[in-house]
Image: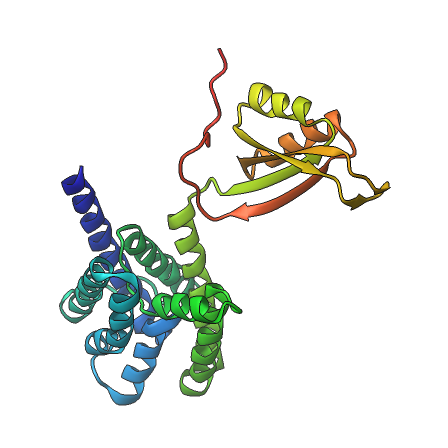
Length: 286
């Protein structure tokens, strides 16, 4: 199983490298667009200094790889170093055709291929861009900003520089590339079935539990709680708190069934980035 897992990770990283290489050489570079993160910084520096992009992508990522080695482990650092080195070699030696001169298609599909590449590499246990490592470490250290906030701040600076170096139009198309890549990364990592966590507080918890598990085929976790202060004032009566996870398509059906049983039920929804174990697929009815 360990060998099989290693082979799958390696295949994902290789496919990720090729996809990112196509996104860069087949779409972005011929049109002088950039992406966010270290890739964007490398393209801007290459444009200003004429140093080969393949060298810059590896060199600028080195400090982040060192941080990854110290904080996230040897295996992660080795995989990431190999992935970034592979991307550098692809950019240096592989030929990709200029797929389309259309600027909008270039921005969107360049982002799609780069995002798919980054997503597959992450699935394989590596990164193709060191920005994610830095963002994760800053987020852990400060406890004030999230990883996504750090990445956003870094990219605002990068695209701000792109306005002055490449011009407003190319910078705006580059932002579109970044957004396209971000959505593709989310799709690769989370898939179509993005999950929603639902917390239900009700005096009819047992009926709701039966409806969710038997009628809708979903697993639940039940907590025992007490009401604090609500519409009826201070009440110390017991309440059952039910937690379940469903796909976005199933949420309206769940809410409808819950509110049919108890119109006064208190429902809280939150997005779930990932799940492991538990009853995530619907149980088959007999």
